[in-house]
Image (cartoon, rainbow, N blue to C red; front, side, top):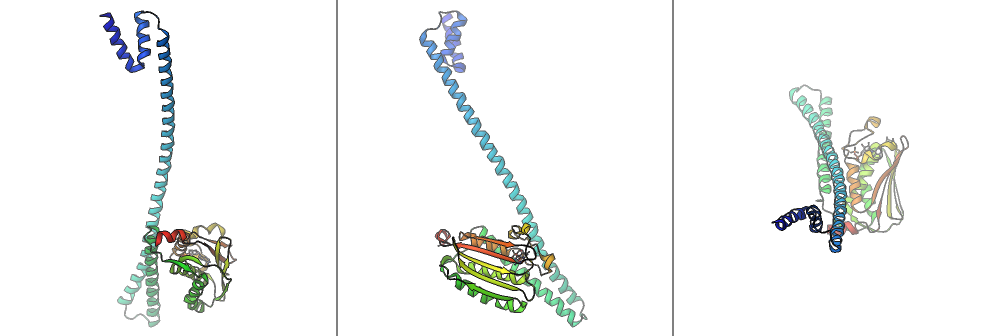
Length: 317
Ligand code: ADP
């Protein structure tokens, strides 16, 4: 009966502290003979296993801590994204409503009051047409931005001559320059061909040109330059307009951010042209940036690497 009891105690304890330790513990209680060398060795063995377990546990708990810190960071990022999405949505809503409100208001005036002077009628109609154009541009740019950001934009990448793209962009915007009385000069050095999407590249150049002309006063000057660069080719669009304070250099590349309307009193744009242009240049592995100071004009520049589009082109085709 005693032996049964000892056996029972040992099996119960063995689950908790290991077989050898249980035997010794029970033996010391029932006052059997002292543990032999084998048993002592077993105890040491179990002890080292316990140490290994506890080491493993420590390791695991450190891993858990790291994982939970990563989760916290990811969560904070998600919250930030959520906030940016809210801000973006309220900007979009605002930007869409503003032109609609004035289109509606002026249309109603024209409808309600048939005796409005002819000059006023023309003024109101001009506003309606302008606002309609702005709304159309805004919607097109929003859709364009969404396509690029979601990776659904189509890219027709090919080997192309940047000189040609610049010449065609200059041609396409020449009327703008004539109408605004801003002088445009072009200086192009021989530069290597790059792999990019011709229409997208022209979209970037035309956006920089139309910004330059938009912000330049009558009699202003704009210069486009093309030159080889260490990375590939470099294009500069320099104007002698009001310039942009260094604090705003990054802000203007954010969606819907416009900074100089109050300064220039120029008609409001959409604030999407530069962010889209930067995305396009980055798609081809390049960079787009501005150098400017208030009152000293602005130079927008981009570089395209020589294998521009090699990476992007592989995805696109
Ligand atoms: P938009 O011109 O439609 O407002 P953009 O994204 O093209 O949108 O430009 C964002 C802002 O950057 C402009 O509203 C203006 O404040 C500033 N900006 C862009 N180009 C120039 C320039 N050449 N000179 C001065 N400010 C500029």
